[in-house]
Image (cartoon, rainbow, N blue to C red; front, side):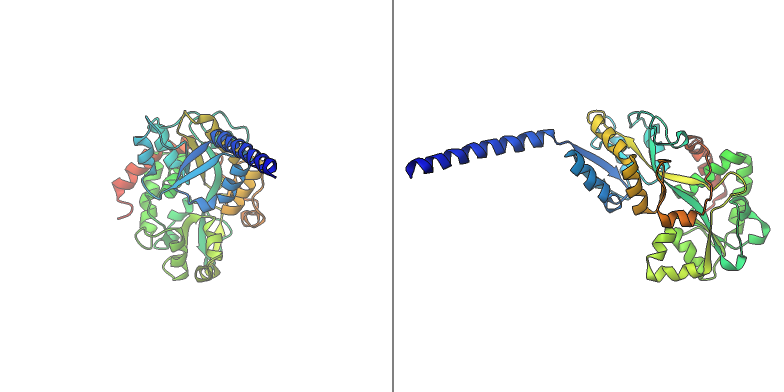
Amino acid sequence: MFMKSKYFLLMGAIFAVLFSMYVSVTKASETTIRVYSERQPFLIKPLIDQYENNTGNKIEWIFSKKGLVQKTILEKDSPIADIFLSADIARLIDIAEADANFEIPFQESVPSNLQTKDWTSLTMRARIIYAHNKLNLDQISYEDLVLPQYKGRVCTRSGFHPYNISLFSALIAHHGEEWFEDYIVKLKANLARKPQGNDRDQVKAIYAGVCDLSIGNHYYYFKMMNDPNQKIWLDEVSLIFPNQDTYGSHVNISGIAILNNKNYDSALDFLEFLLSDEAQKIYADDNNEFPVNPKVSPSAKVTKLLNNAKFDSIDLQEIASNRKAVLDILRKINFDG
């Protein structure tokens, strides 16, 4: 009996040592990847869970609506985060211009106009036009918003919001700065009220009879459909993907940049996972956005909304290069005032 007890004690001790060695090795092999993002983690949680289960690596998500770009730039010589995941191209450009990122290899799963050496796109969203049903419009262009018949009938959020800056930058790419300055003066004259609120507030304004046309991202349609208090606004509104007769609807992106060379391989591994067929499907479906990977189709409901509309294929880097000109012109004419 005594010998058996000693045997079990010995085996227990050996098991404990082996288990502690296993835990130690496992912890040593785990890598923590820190992500700065203005996107809340629930928007990407299924992918985080899957990546962690697949690799044993851990994702530490650091979320803030404001200040992360400035924080990234201040920390660039000793970065805390490994990745910056942005809801808009503007933040990625700011980081690249501050030399706060590391180059990314060309990603075969992403069209060349949607990536640079500094960042790559993850998903796309279209900047569309919401129109009152009484207008009976099948098609409209961004350029049409300044026509005389729409005077006092257009609503928009701040012209200085990144979503509008991106659209306006694309218009400069297509038409030039001189044309754009004339355009933006006329657009301001056609506004029903001073720019205010968010994209959904503009649809609410159409429902309330304040205006007949507004500019907004396509995915807000689904957000409003899922809110009983907002769904009623859509009863008065049609969604139009503009410029189908010319260059196609403007798209902005969510995207990613790598910030830390010390953890570069792990950061790149996570980036490439997010661009994989499976991850692109999950990410785009959960956010009602368009995958950048051409092999992956949008969700059925997004495909139905899109209805074979085409997107502007202009290089996003060219669009980004016009941001300063847009801001200068908006300030010059006091667009929001």
